[in-house]
Image (cartoon, rainbow, N blue to C red; front, side, top):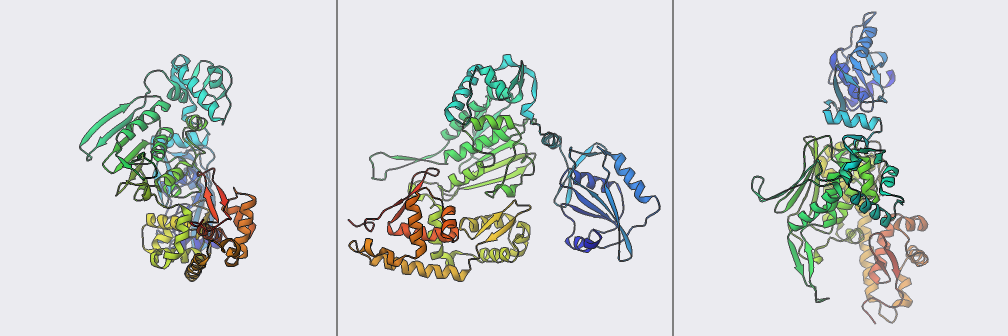
Length: 567
């Protein structure tokens, strides 16, 4: 510690460090915030600017301070103490680790560390922290107000049938035996989850729905008090009933195609998120408001655990759940996938709607998600191109559309792989939200990837330069010219002359395993995933290769006979 104090002072206060000119009650508050978070150290004898002011020590000073910390905290904190002499002045450092049983209080108040400050916990946050530490879940507690007589076993049987049809788990025996197996009941006691999922009559929690022209002009208002599976279905029906519908006749068939205002799978995910992850200790309703060109979804309860808003914009975050038994039920019925994948699926769905955005915020002890658009999708031709198509056209438009901000972000990441969103925002001179959007673009293009978590991970760059991308563009133009010069008679015989060994190897691998992934191809050919995408796009241009099937069951198909469009 004594060797690196100057480095710590230069870095300044943060998640794990705070400076104090003297010992006082705020020192203890900070230590409490540290033990309720990830640990940290308080430096006594340092001002807010990181300048050493020193502290006078008597023979009993440190012992008295330690005793005060111990007596004013519950459970008691006993920090490690170190006295550092620097610039001929004394600095006292109190060091604490994350506490195993949380939360810890100072005289009845609870704090946690958020960035550079101490955040006073609300009652809901105190409860969440305690249950998470003890590995409890509110929905797993037995209800004091309900018994097994309040369970609707028709709903239970319907649930069992759905679970068995999905095949993620096999439920055998009577409905009561199945509920015991899943820990929803024990003898005549029922959990909170059992009542919310299978209770008779009205659910004690509301879903408040409304159609608004403006914030103050309500066109329609609906209140649902249903058990959770029914609430999901009825909420979805209501929102679909409020959606505008476009009709398209493509000419390929005599039937018209309906295009709903919003992608229903994304809307369903947002409904599920509201009901599964809400804080059921809060009396506030789930509130869903439909406006002319956006819908808002609010549920009480902020993000659970250590999850941050920034994490949700990535594809690598791992979520924990506030209501484990409720989440398990929806997982078993196939309504949700693994925890933490919902927002990725929402992003994938709204890609099909070119001007649509999905945004989310933590507000007033709750979570608010918004889906909005500037122009309605009225044709299937409006569908945004998939990642392969975006990548295919990227090098052709790179020099025109690749902004200075994106270039600067790439340069900063290459020079410092551990650079944070905040540092990028400061150096580039744009908002943190804009940085997140731009890094997501770079990830989709295969130019960067995130290794590890947002807090402890780092960036990995493909090391592709602007010059290399322009060179690729020239090669693509040359390739297109060569392909166009081939005739139907000489196409099959001569196409190999314009392909590299890598392309030939890719074709061989795809022929031997049509379900092979881009990652597997990159590993076997010995080139980057970005290069694999470029080469498969070339093959698709010739008509020799196509991608067939849905998002999860897709595969490659090799066509050998003739140039596309020729017989």
